Length: 184
Image (cartoon, rainbow, N blue to C red; front, top):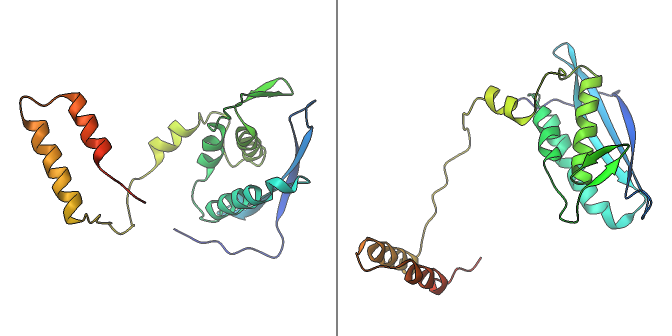
């Protein structure tokens, strides 16, 4: 992973996103700043704002997370595609004749359009499937071992033994799982 330091001057664009048109008419402002990295423009940071202060926490959280991913110096196009897959349980909305599953999907599509405009991605890229094909799966994260208490081990061993027996039923398995008390 390469961490890229912020230069003194960055170039970018600010997009006005109109959401809930005709209902609450919420306006969001999405600013995406780019740097020149390895000979091409690369998204470097994102800022999302609105005048509605009730959205402040998630706007800042999303802005910081996306900006942190952008600063890694790797292919970050997947961010736009992943955001486009987020749906709102209240239903999709239409903006300028296009349907968006959620406000986050609208933000993802705007990120994708920006990446196309600056030449970061090519129009033929098909989305997250292409990213998955190109991704190299090497883990540098330390392995984590989950430790169980003696009680948890005994219950799990008991359930496993019952599952192996011939007279075990699916109904009994459900009751065993419900009896197993898990606290976070």
